Length: 462
Image 1: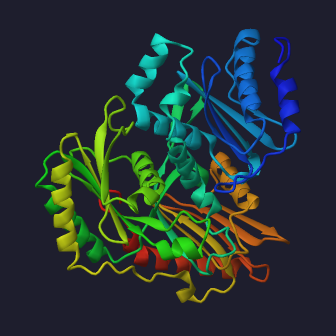
Image 2 (image 1 turned 90 degrees about the vertical axis):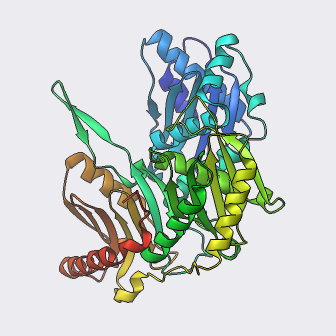
Image 3 (image 1 turned 30 degrees about the horizontal axis):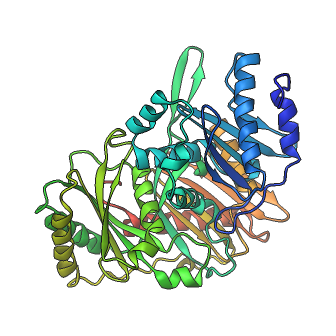
């Protein structure tokens, strides 16, 4: 690109490019990470021209900076392609996607940046580029590409939830979620807005189980971990390998059972997602070794230093992660794991049955219920998904502060968005239902969810 080409000219050229789908991830998006000097660092794409496109992204940033004396945030083309840019010095992250995918660029960009920090620490990342601005960071990240790939797939999993035709009907997914606080400026004042759309949240799949059973597991892990005082966080996951085989394409076969915060600080859900991705990416390695011990930096806890993570399978169905501040504590973590295995063997960790089909609402096709920290996703069959119309409703409601929004579509039926101080709800019904019938059904569903919600609440994250 020559120096006199404008960002708009380059964007029009980008609009003619066709996004190619990944075989192991979401379609219609690309993620590029470059150093500020323009060297490629990471690429989530199947494009043959990805290296060239990364150079174009760097050029767009530099052209805007030098010619316009401004910072480029994003470009949206006539064809509906959005290119989001973020300078996370010393890195540049570019995210290319279709606007109707319902994906929040900020979440993805921030988490990809956090994942790179978790591998290197912020201090190391800054240091290598201070010493040599043209440093090839790709060499340091060699072998970690799968981990970043997995994180992106995990971030997208609620958006893509149940899209596989192999998924069973009436499947309910529960998530630990963390909202992003947004703000808007009125006059000279910045007003905090705690209402956020579905796409502006972090999601970690939760195992649906009885509250008393989860509490028992929580107490066992806390008690066993007390023998290793440097263990500050413990997480237990369920691993359903049968579900992985049956529902190919779903990331929800690994689910969070509990988080034990042995430290005075609470583990941030954004960092929990990094650990969840690590467990998922390490599945094949865990199948061949009893356990492994590796450094990981959790950016929201301490971005400049490593914790050390002991990850192991307790059985074919459960995975335990112990995080310690002492890199010499592998043996203590092993002993803690053995103690947890012995005590959990006396507890039957059976999942609970919790299904919206119990309410006999055949006209309900799709439901997304979201409280401050937890959310439930359900749909009647693989035919129904969270469409672009649903994303239109969420965005419209957020911008206008509407409490309810009804929309009838010949193709999608009757859609409802409902925002209250304690929850957000989005539902889709078939074309035969009336608005009054839909409202009656939703009120029954909300009552049912509040009755059932203790089955997908993680202690300390209520």
